[in-house]
Length: 297
Image (tube, rainbow, N blue to C red; front, side):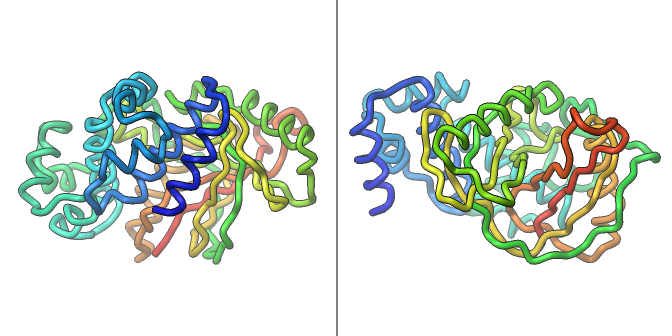
């Protein structure tokens, strides 16, 4: 709570801009994702955002495209759906992990979004439940994974929303590199990453969110809509994908549909991310190399 109040004082001392508003919303979203197993106190969210309680709901609703209560419920249900699709965690435990007191409460909310019970969803998990343009591809060039312990990474990031295939990642990376130059943050070993918060097989296009990031060990500061946060360290399965970026969706299909069920591994409740090892302007698309990081327990 002390950290929340410190951040609020810090933001209230700065003039508000559209980019500043977006960064405040990002703080709220991150807090919700990290506290799904708790009762989310809207007063804490309002304080974290540094919006007045009177205006908090209206501003957040406008910027998220839905009321804050609906966003929280949808985030709980989509998290439950991912656990149902990709793990063997019992339904009762999933209910508690995403903030429901009983499995029946989860089931009632789940039916409202997907039209079927959590148990039936698990049975039919290989059938996409939302619109998806990603199709499996037997020709995907994907290495066997290496299991690595990854340290915590500090990143500067810009959040993007919408269909992942339509995000202009290049323009976001250009802005981030300009930020690095302007604030003299350049150092060896900066990595180009994208964190994906939603599964296109579960969330509708308009609700897909990702963070375009640069790792910055020198201690970046938030400016405008460029935020700063940490990527959780720990155990990851790291796959090397070689080929054009549109094929990455098929790579995830192979990982989640083929490797994961046979691996004996359990997914950790952290987002996947990608690291780009070469530049699309410097090599042919078929030689692009991308590391895919899958968080494991």
